[in-house]
Amino acid sequence: MTTTTVQTQAPRTSWIPIIWIGALHVGAAFALLPSNFSWSAVAICLFLHWLTGGIGICLTYHRLLTHRSFTLRPRWLEYPLTIIGTMASEGGPIGWVADHRRHHAFSDDEHDTHTPLQGFFWAHMGWWMVVDDTSRHTAAYYKRWAPDLYKDPVLRWIDNYHILFPIALMGLLYAAGGWSWLVWGGFLRTILVLHTTWLVNSASHIWGYRTHATRDQSTNLWWVAALTYGEGWHNNHHAFQTSARHGLDWWELDPTYWVIKGFSYVGITGNIKLAKVQRKRAAADAEPALNGGTVQSIVDDPNQFVPADDPHQFASVES
Ligand SMILES: [Zn+2]
Ligand SMILES: [Zn+2]
Image (tube, rainbow, N blue to C red; front, side):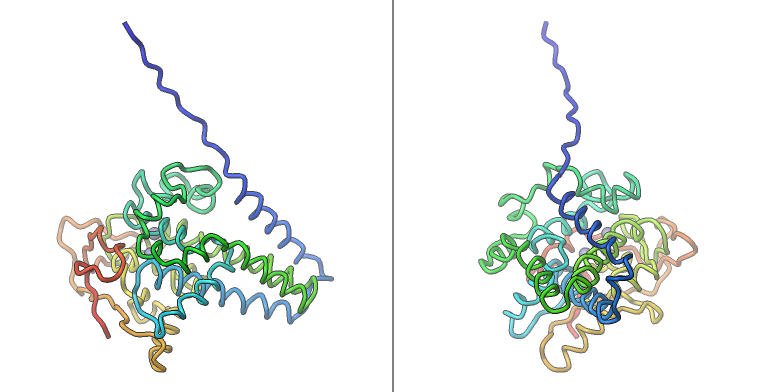
């Protein structure tokens, strides 16, 4: 007779991001010292929050690289914009895109990287503090979730050396404005970008209203949208993942889309994909809307995360 023993491994701590992001939090705390305050440092902090968070992460990492919701002319503009994205200290572009496409494929089920079903803290920042063998940034993982980016040698180079760019930016800030600019524009700005991004994963899967009966628990949440340049209209985004515009109702302000649309007038952006929203009450078997929201459509297309050129993309039109 043989017996088998099931071994449950304790989660392994992911020390490198904990030390890096922990150090950034300690650095950000120095903003509390009045001696580090200056109005120019506050202005730099706000500007770089928009540049690295709004343009780098929301517009480039998310709407361009992950979902290919528009194209750039010339295409090489993608590279400097991606470098701006690395300066948010959210990792390299290929790993970020792969993790996010996986989130869309398995939203709020057991394979999701950061579902709030395991608690708010887990969805917000706990998920990157432990080693997850199913989402290690290996070549196989990249080839599965981001093959389009992985075959681009420039993006692979940026992904490999992404850590150099936020460090270079901090060096530049110190050289240009001293300790005050480094604390406000470097440390504090990075922490604010990280937490506002994480709120999309945590708060925008918990609170807010649901316009579309997606398979997950994503919500539209105005205050997260305000902090993330439109990314908080997250239920709309889960419903229409390839849409460049996330704010679909008139009150759902979406500054990232304004930039994409604005650049189209001077020919820098094109092929802007938009959602076709069915203004109908959902069928009786639809998941009920949360917090009084009105269900307008049922959307359930797990293939939407597939990058551009896929002929099966859902509800996409070119403007
Ligand atoms: Zn989500
Ligand atoms: Zn997305």
